[in-house]
Image 1 (cartoon, rainbow, N blue to C red):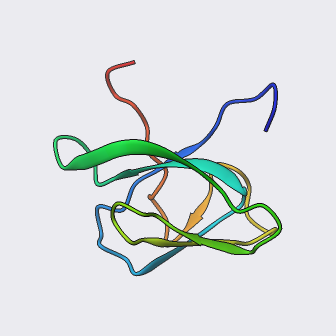
Image 2: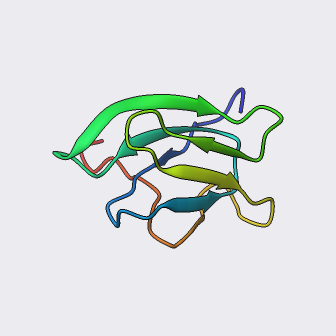
Length: 81
């Protein structure tokens, strides 16, 4: 995602898996104050990646846009910014 913003995703719902439309992203865990270190993840040639902090399985779905998730509402929006 060179030249663009890296999307951040959160898992407040405790979902075992979240489908996303990007392969490079940040996982924040749950929303603050229950977040973990914001970790950059890159799926590379794979179609899924597990966050090493919260164990959320992220799966790539090319039909989703960068700001869409399944289940919905897992895109992290920094309210302080």
